[in-house]
Amino acid sequence: MAKYPQLITNYLDFCNLRSQYDSYETVDLSTVGFYYPTTLLPIINFIKENSIVYLPHYNGTVTRYIDIITNPQKDYIDRVSYIPIEQLQTNDYSSADSILKRIINFVSKEYTLNAFSYILTELVDNIYEHLECSNAYVMAQKYPTKGFIEICIYDDGISIPGSLSRKYAELKEDEDHESIAAALEGYSVKEGGRGHGIRSSIRIFSQGMNGKILIVSRRGAYYIHSEGKNFYRFTDEKLKLDGTLISVRVPLDIGEVNIYEYL
Amino acid sequence: MSTYKNRISIKESISDYLAIRSSAKQFFNNIESLPALEITIDFKDVQFMNRSFAHEYLTQKRHSKKRIREINKSINIDKMFYVVKNSKEEKEHVGKTHVIPI
Image 1 (cartoon, each protein chain N blue to C red):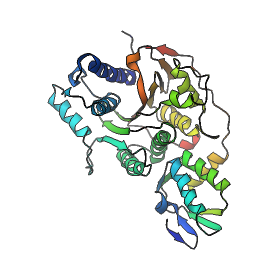
Image 2: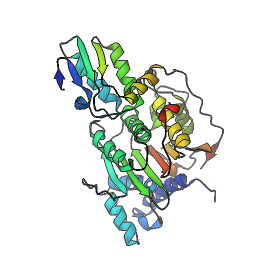
Image 3: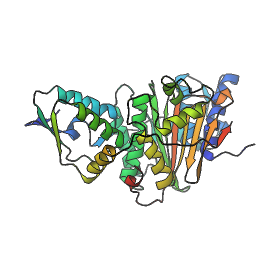
Image 4: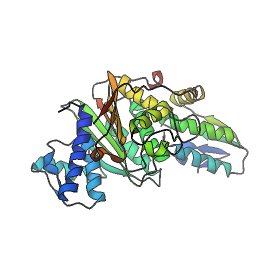
């Protein structure tokens, strides 16, 4: 079996869970031993959107964790290590403000505020500007023992290839990784001067913060870290994502990051 | 929108975190509806502004019929405006050497 980066295998875990529904009309959460946001966020959305009766995890701790993450608490206590799944109101961008501040406060002890604020806000702004979604969600989890934070943003919109193909007919439907590349290179359906935010965000994350980023959109994916990058082309239709998922994983022990070096 | 002698607090109008492009567009739509020809935008207590917001702000300002000036900008706000004003339009090559089929 091919060895993929962990963020990719976490996404594949989600796809395997989702495909259970096609075969058995249910989802057995016990088939995944440990839930990272990259797996949990899209599968919870899938379960809710399809009103699926699912089999809970055999491990009570995991079941309790999933229950906490999927029921947003309005009052967080300081020692809490997560942001539960929050929905961004895609018809009201002002709702993003409180969620963004909550996440920025969540990471404020570990990171230079400007670096994380910049990246997070650029990713969320991208949802409102381009992806025409009905639902968008975000969650975050700190792993102090493992030494990183993972943040996952997912939307069920038209996807990056879906958006760009409206303007750039040369982008082929079976080469969705090309569309992701085009978006990262600055191609946009909007007027000039676009694309800088997402590109600089990826530079800051991967180079400045030694982070790992996964972007999945329709039948393509992009994975980048400080030592390299890969594009993925999904040949199996079961891996297709209706929308866009972005996961970022950042070490906890980085120092000050001057974002202006990367802008 | 909070105004005082044609001075508008952008923090009160939008947020102390300026992050969403559409909020900049809406902000300027509201400004254009004001009777005053000169508007002062007060950036006091703004904690953060991302690049997308700065780009939209400057784009809207360029097209505005008002004379607009900014006050109380922090160093980081100034820096972000500077970065946007000096950005090049060219596309950046990402490279797709490694494409892995799954």
